[in-house]
Amino acid sequence: MKLNKWTLLVLAVVCGSQLKAQSLNIIPEPFHVAKGTGVFQFPKSIAINAPSSANDVTDQIALQLRKATGKTVYFSKNNASINLDIIKDEVLGTEGYTLNINAEGITISANTNAGLFYGWQTLQQIMPSAVYAKTVQSNTNWQVPFVSVIDKPRFGWRGLMLDVSRHFFSKADVKVFIDDMARYKYNRFHWHLTDDQGWRIEIKSLPKLTEVGAWRAERKGKWMNITTPAINEPKTYGGFYTQEDIKEIVAYAKSKFIEVIPEIDIPGHSMAINTAYPQLSTTPNYPYQVNAGDEFMDWEGINGHVTARIDNSLDPSNELVYTYLDKIFGEIAPLFPFEYIHMGGDENAKNNWEKSANVQALMKKEGLKNQNEVQSYFVRRVQKIINSKGKKMMGWDEILEGGLSGDAAVMSWRGIAGGVEAAKQGHKVVMSPNQYNYIDFYQGELTAEGKVYSGLRMKKTYSFDPIPEGIDSSLILGNQGNQWTEQLQNMRNVQYMTWPRALAIAETSWSPKEKKNWNLFSKKVEAQFDKLDAANVKYAKSMFDPIVTTQLNTKGELIVNMEGEVDGLKICYTIDESMPDNFSEVFTKPFVLPEDVTILRVIAYRDGKQISKLLNIPIESLKKRAVKVL
Ligand code: ACM
Image 1: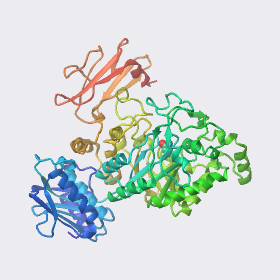
Image 2: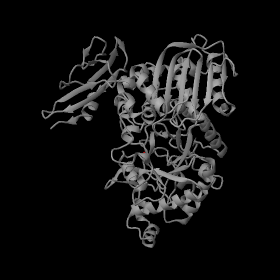
Image 3: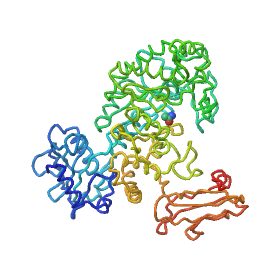
Image 4: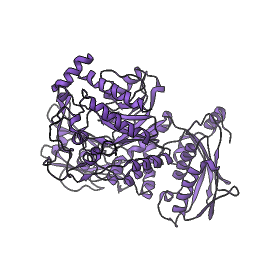
């Protein structure tokens, strides 16, 4: 079908109905979906007809269909069940596609292979969930409903970040993370490769970065609350990627139409570098070791500035730092074809810079009035190095402090303020605000999930819009979720924290704003659980756990409120220490908790079946979370 703006509009008006669209449960919601009547039944053997230029996509389709259906899949122009077409259509852009399924078969059309790939992702979502399986699912009725989809993304940057420093994840793990992203049309993988707890990328000219910087003493337990290792304790925990590994991952991501953005987090978060090369810090004689998760920073700091008891910054006054960074970025740039390199720039404690005579001398020489200007000087030097390697620089929003120039782009994480300011200054922006998009935060009831910094319900993640009022929207590259791994020691745990919240970020990043609707989305999420199961992805069901909040009134009474994150929950509870069931007290309105109650136990039911976890919330936690009402 040849498309132009008019056909798109007419189709949208004639066929567009949210309800019809939703019954297919596609995430992210397409630009336009119209469900037909009837189904296409896959034949015994499946023929695919596609131009050879689309082989990168066609091969993946054939592989997955063979694996899950056990059918013969072959390439033929005749009697094809699946047709892939490269077309020329200005409306679809570089990532859009159309998907049409009718009695004749399935046709995906796009301007590019990326579009075909996204059409394939949508097709899989409307096929039986078993399509995601890694082994033949012989009891499946392989059919798909008739449908017409016209789709294209809202944003060109649809990202997820993975921190591989706080815990190292193998190449195979990283591929799993990328596979999971691809299913939901993410196209940017931000790889946080360095931090205080490990340097993870081979730099051939600076071998100690990985020989020393990639390894630390092993610790279990709660991050920043664990025992500091003795300096001579064996450093056996960690790992790194060789440059060959990096090339393999970048190529793998590319095959899923995902660009990789490497992050080298400097000048702060550099304990691993300082352990490998202490001469790069302002305290070169300090007996450094790669941090094992024990506390060394004061995050509240002095006058609101983070302070580091052990200097984890690079010395901005030391020319050797820039020489080494030139080597580092010189080796990194050719490994990553994407246009941006991320230089971190966040949470740099400046208390050790303040104490350094060399930094004072630098300030005098360069006319730098304060530590923010020192950081800005450092950032400008790094930007020059990155630009000299043919790349553009990106950094966390702290890089704005003290002034930012050139084509640097800003990743806004401390809310959206940095993004707004950056856009006002004409810089490109990726929105990644911690209040909405930090998917390392615990996602349901605190006492059931364990504390990780702060809580973030998926409903809040879903409510985010990346384009603030009053700024040039063309400067907003897109939206990103961040998976920090302080508390995540393996990929199953990473998946649990990522999904389903990353479905919300995917929909915000891809779908038209007008198509977003939490109630419909949360139902689609439930339908995705089956698919995530088929793909062996671990995920959280925290959205079924009631949100329990408390208020302390002027009489000193604790008032309990409970609400469902999703519709249709019956919330049952006890305050007499007994286990709740479907016949326990049903929450209908906020109530005063009697004085001597020790524990609130809660279960949510739907259609008579337990759907939430059993929440056991001690009185101390209820008191601690109370908001005071004056
Ligand atoms: C950050 O979360 N420190 C970027």
